[in-house]
Amino acid sequence: MIDLINYLNIISNRNDIKVVYSQELDAYTPDLSVPSQRKIIINRKSNNNVSVAFRLAHELSHILFGSVEQNRVYAFSIGATKSSERIAHEQAMHMIVKYVFQDTPSNIETTLILWKYWDYLPALKMWLAKPL
Image 1 (cartoon, rainbow, N blue to C red):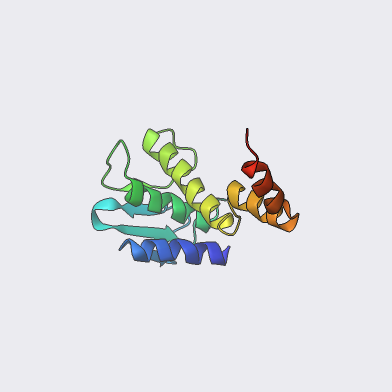
Image 2: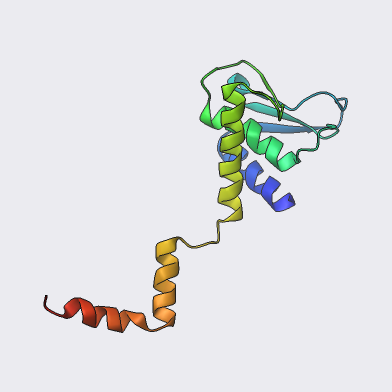
């Protein structure tokens, strides 16, 4: 999980978003993002069961991708029904999936690797060279 958090911190740094990890807040204070200040506060003492990585990706999503409802401050809540929160959940998952599968080649790359391994490329070239 640390590697994922580092990946998300790199995204925040590249996009000039300041992330503060606070040990000072009480357990019931949610994580916050303030798009106008490009700032995120992650509550390290939060009592919710959601991983810090997902919460960070969620708050980054508010700033990076905007939303239909431009709030001044977003407070993390896993059960929120506002469209802006659902969109942030979805975008957070996209960021996490991109990290998890970053070393997985695309389907085309996989196919070409397998063809090369099984020596299909010479056969394919011959088949393509045949007149119709």
